[in-house]
Length: 214
Image (cartoon, rainbow, N blue to C red; front, top):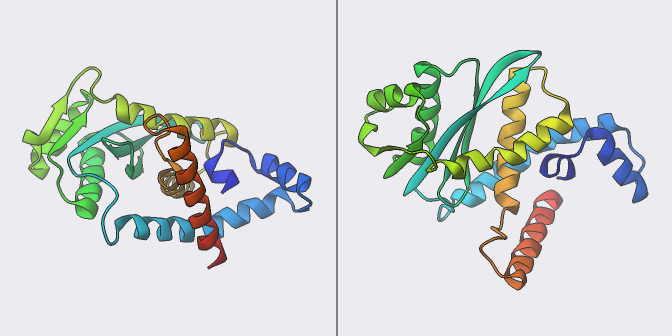
């Protein structure tokens, strides 16, 4: 949790655990998140989907940012709902119509169609919307997509701590795990009172400890 949730390196986590009397190697932390991260992320996703989904199909925000993998530019696509819930992350080598369509198909297959899809002015989105039959749901505006653009910030902080990425497959795996854990601990601090936020934060931590114990 510490490694994926916070912008920490493997060695940072090793040092923090050492202060708590736990002596491990940083490679052990890498092994832990590689083995257990997908399992925990999968359980979190199941809990958020059943029995009532904790996301909204009213409005989605789609956006893409570039990432470097071994010095080559790739693109990380992200979809969030109007409350900031991360719905899907997708890594591709380009940002053409095919990549946009693959990304859109993944989301639609998993969640169904929303009423509104907000994007930037990238032409690949419009082309993909026409093919998928969602062109009339698309909205484009200068500041309308700030919700998704802001959702990239936690990942950018993690990217800096991880000193870039070496493989496309590893990046896809990490961003999927990171999104699930972000959703679990994201209690919208700016919308809730301090007391309510503390209760929700404690509940999220207890649920996570139960997940780990299982």
